[in-house]
Length: 121
Image 1 (cartoon, rainbow, N blue to C red):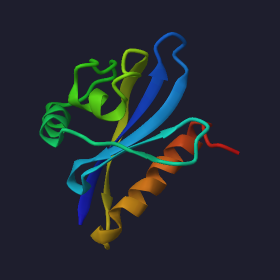
Image 2 (image 1 turned 90 degrees about the horizontal axis):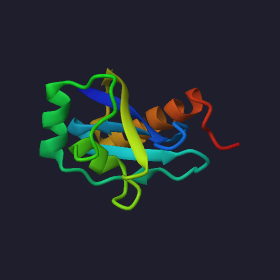
Image 3 (image 1 turned 135 degrees about the vertical axis):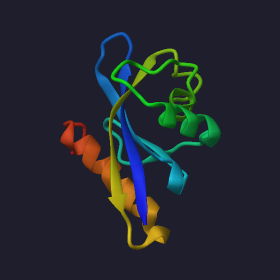
Image 4 (image 1 turned 90 degrees about the vertical axis):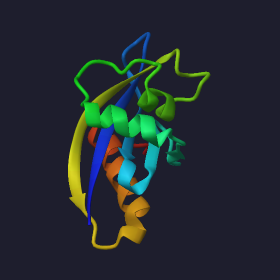
């Protein structure tokens, strides 16, 4: 089964420094953030209709509006005014065991953070 995943950087508005990275996969109903310096993945709730609409409309390199479904899904209400969300990339992946999608997507998220130097030692 083929799934499309999107990856995002979450940065501090005042410094531009990364504070976390995220992966969204609507087909698996997966939205999660791994904050820099943390080891526990933060599972996020999403308004999937809005997220899917935004993804289907296409994402450019600009920061996502704070009012967007994706920004709201990835940031807590009290932090959204201090964080920026930007799309990094998207990819199609093939999963032979869809019941293990979360495990596979968690690994993609951890690899994303590690590739940007944000893995906790």
